[in-house]
Length: 505
Ligand SMILES: *[C@@H]1O[C@H](CO)[C@@H](O)[C@H](O)[C@H]1NC(C)=O
Ligand SMILES: *[C@@H]1O[C@H](CO)[C@@H](O)[C@H](O)[C@H]1NC(C)=O
Ligand SMILES: *[C@@H]1O[C@H](CO)[C@@H](O)[C@H](O)[C@H]1NC(C)=O
Ligand SMILES: *[C@@H]1O[C@H](CO)[C@@H](O)[C@H](O)[C@H]1NC(C)=O
Image (tube, rainbow, N blue to C red; front, side):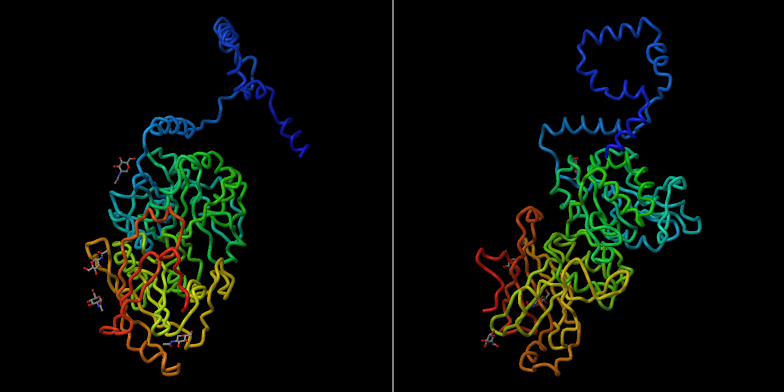
């Protein structure tokens, strides 16, 4: 401690002692100041300042400092009136891409990117090859990242592109675009659900320093990299004032954390120097898992869906479709009609038959022809393994092991369509998918369940403002299980009443 102080003191140049306590001058009386100025003008300026301080150099240029000052005065003026809610125009996306992979990765980006509505750039390592044809208007515009060969990168199992991608936030900031409240970083295979992203960002004051995102699902990843960083593929958001602080030290961080694997980890290192922790939002999904994401998405935490990532590395979200089409089905289906509600989890019982029904809105319904506890229903089925070692555990959340006996598994129904009923409600329907080997199971339970062809689920549009309240899962009421009209069970999702709980009678 003491020795480092001495060291710092030794390295201080004498002129620094004169210049650095600049704030002292503010407290010097105006008369003294005037006198000082007069001396300066009567003697030559160079003598007054430079010959006394022969080693004086102009301060390192800090282009962002001007912008910070402009930003602060700008915000002072608008802080006096009520401020507009954050909308798409306030978010600047920085997508880490590469010229070689863009032609395939763009299909994920184009699922969510709306030209003219969203602002941002794909940052490439070099100009796209001529042979790739013209840059499409359906893609975000691109920029070529600055050269990064001067930076250190010493992680033996990573690639140098991490340095370039870490600097996207700095290069985005230095564009100096107007009216940016949030810098949102993502990979070229990150799918953003931007309505929900903006709604989540609206919860936070963009004039304060916020770093918002999520962790890896696989504990092995969080141990290797970090729990304290926002994973880049899951995407993370940095408020303007934090970005301003970050870009001042980022290049130094890149060298200091040269042994860190990823760009996101280097940013995380910098954030720990600034002292701003990650604000975790459960809707950012890194998807560091292998296998099927079904279990995770059918028991989504109580938070709006913000991102999905790594979709090339897991099975398609819906069976019988390719990966991209399966995301389209989620986006153009429930998400389009009721963005806040997509993947929201509710469950309930049919007390007449002792059935349990678990609904992930816009995605899937599970029917268990027996009673399953609320605790089990709210725990994701483990349809996946860990990212790096393909192990059964551990994850950053609990899972229900899928080697449930065959007769303990649910009958699965997948989202098939949505209709807006025009009175602030939607109807979604779900069709039977798996052929369950029921004959091996207790036939009494399964005979009736076998006849169920689908579910019709009605729900009021979920007001985005609900996410600002204390979270509570909604309730599902099974409407017509007893007569089971045309093999379709009707379910109504509604707020639970204050004393209601999903408890088997
Ligand atoms: C977004 O907010 C700005 C004010 O910052 C406003 O001028 C603009 O009209 C808003 N855009 C939309 C689409 O609501
Ligand atoms: C439902 O389960 C309860 C006990 O959990 C049992 O008493 C009741 O008979 C069951 N009803 C049916 C229809 O199976
Ligand atoms: C909306 O309309 C549907 C069908 O027309 C009806 O079943 C439902 O009760 C209505 N919901 C509300 C909240 O009025
Ligand atoms: C379920 O919804 C579909 C699609 O709107 C409709 O055709 C069908 O009649 C509904 N069935 C029941 C039982 O409500």
